[in-house]
Amino acid sequence: MREMSNMIRPVLYDIIWVILVVSTALELMALGQDIPFSTIVAMIIALSAFKVFLIAAFFMHLIYEPKAVVGLMLFGLAVFITLLTGLAVS
Image: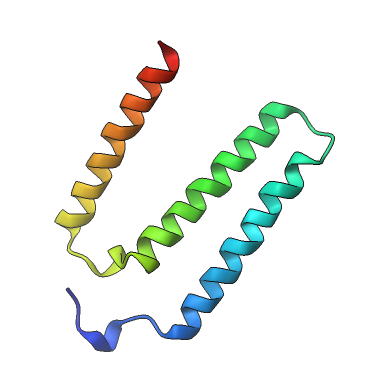
C-alpha cells in the first residue's frame, strides 16, 4: 500500500459523492424520457459502469493497491460477468 501522504483528501470524497448522486439522477431522469428503450438501457449500463469504477477506485481504495490485487479483482469480475451472461442466455 502506498504511503499515507498519497491518500485522498476528504474533499475529493465529497466531489465523488456528488458525481455519484448526479449520475444516479441522470439514470432516473432517463426513464421518463421519450427515447428508445435500448438507448435507455445502454445509458444506464454505461453510467452504472462509471459509478462502479469510482466506488471501487476511491471508496474501496483499489487505486492504492498493488496491480496484482487489482488484477485479481478484475478476474473475479470477469468470471462473475461470464456466469451472469450464461445464466441470462440460457
